[in-house]
Length: 452
Image 1: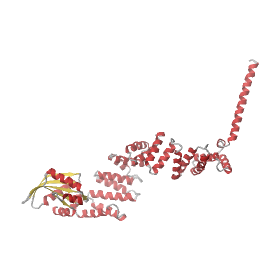
Image 2: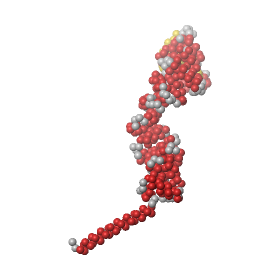
Image 3: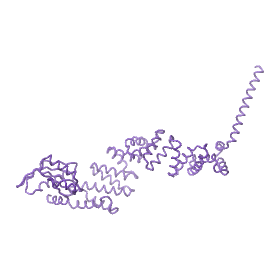
Image 4: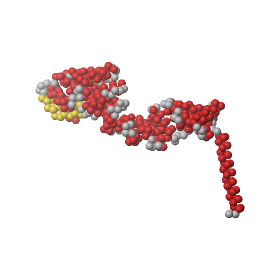
């Protein structure tokens, strides 16, 4: 190899060595100049803390030292110290543009959330969102706080933004679904919550809200199925029993409703207001099956706790009256076949010494029965339509207008309307110039006792 080539190689090697040394010297001096974040973080924890505190002793607003401590506490989940340190940094962000104001504010809010200091968390996160609005952690946590504050429209907006970034985050789907339910977007709510239940089948809170969604969408069977599934749950069970029983009452499944309400009352911890409503509705279910002797003690127990609860005083009086009058009990509560049999007896004996021919019987939703008759006496003959109404409430003009239309349809000469309740003033005025007689509860009881 020529000597000149060897010299060139040696020179190149020397240049490389000198260049490397120069770079190392530059980096070393740069590190000495910084001595802040990078230098301190390279040391062990105790040294980092000591150095940061030393610098803070000289300058309580040293931004680098405060940032090092705040990030250290945050990563170690020392939330109280992290929140306090980030609070100090927030106070100097306005005068130090080099600080990462968004991260500082976000972490202040998240630390406050970990401490359940929700008011401060909300303030921090709202401020952070004025700086950036595309961060999942921010949108999810602020959306959750809006949900807690019952600001459901805001929660939907924030949680939807969070879902766009992390569509598989289950808690986002959960609280989004719950919020959508509360703004009455039931189909969208169900879609979000199904994704949660697919992976968390034991999320009872979400199952409960799903059951409510199904009810609002008139999918009663699915609603009852979910509420029934939750009946045994210690926390949600009593409320689930109340909902399930009420739906079954509406469907006239009285014995199943009784079971729901009874299960609810057997729970060890039942909220007072739920307990009262369970007893009130169980009494109603017992009344529907003519189990008056079990309904009365329940109503009395409610009255002892809260005499002003709904119409419990009137219900006690009503049940006592039913217990003492089997005919009235049959009229109001018995199965349709027994009710119609009793009505036929009334029709047969209403006009003494008359010939009665029943030509038609129609029962509408177990609410009232129309019996069309041909009546013949020694002095007159006519078509009479009887309407028996199964209620203890007040009958208004609307039902009587319907009755009057029915009279015209069947070409009846006269109508008799019999109810275990009363009639409104409008109803009485409506029949003044029409051939309709109104029979109220007092007269009905006399007629029933005479006909039985």
